[in-house]
Length: 465
Image (cartoon, rainbow, N blue to C red):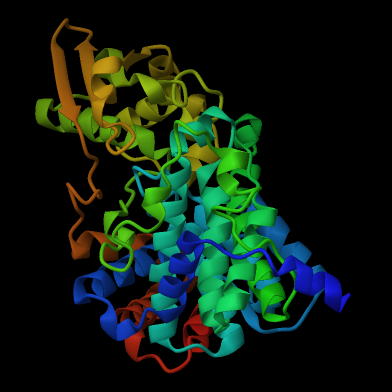
């Protein structure tokens, strides 16, 4: 057996994976720019609100996974958010990962088309509690993992992944989760290489959830990513064997998931440790596919500016980049359907997770407007896609008046950012029903000063409920 292990380690890792490991392992909190730290804390706060909202027992996917974790038992080391019990860090990552993406209100990276925080906050909390990590280590691991999540997706090319029916958030997320977990487990360089290799071995995540109208398997992809990344890091810490190089080895992730024309390995190391991609995350105002958010801003902008009521609308046209229009046009999955989301917003002036889970077509006005929406794939809008989801909404009223509005960057994106007060307001709106006003304020206060937290278990205690 020892001979086989020695022979397997003879294959050397390439320079790209070595550089990634060095960055992930050695980056010190003191080397992080203050702006990156402050932005990461806002992303963390935003994600905690989303997690707490999803912990409501009326939501089936998190509830079923929590019940499974409770029945399986395990070492009580990591909080299962809002469920009143702890489980193993692997089980906690599985359940909380689902909560992270369930409400579809978590921060995302528009160009990489990934939702890093939904996977990595659960990952860092689960492993951080197990290891009694400090707030500084927790936050650094979150920032590092976010960087790798975005970079892996961009290197693979999210367009190629979508064309192949693969979910970038799950493919890149497992590797990112292993990165954050490996950092918190204090893996050495060789173990870190193995953690990434073992994460690559487990990469999965189809877009088949688009045909699951229960909305259960969509967030389960983040469960998979968090669980598999944590498992990979734990196994690597036990010196479990692994492929040495997921980026440049013979059977690398690009061979499996990308294409020669589409891949760009430069993304993995370009600006590494200098440009932190967590700064490019966009906050979400609506519980729906982010592709629809600029169009929603345009629609509600017209309604407000022209003082329209939904009953005034006769026809709506959404022009969207042609390369992405298929994902939001005519799909039966409500969270991704322009024909459903725009009418809900026109009637209720918001879109929340319950609008996705419970069919609002029971409202005659929503049902009427569903038949009035047209999506047009516009090649002229492809120029910046997917970096930007430029959208044009045109409305014709029953009286014959016509209005049009273009939005290139939705509210909450780096180009059109939320104010801190807006992020805090969103957090309170999502968290208060779960934990109450006093506890929500305590979570906000702790998060705002998390770099001075001695043990991240204090955060877990507030989220336990």
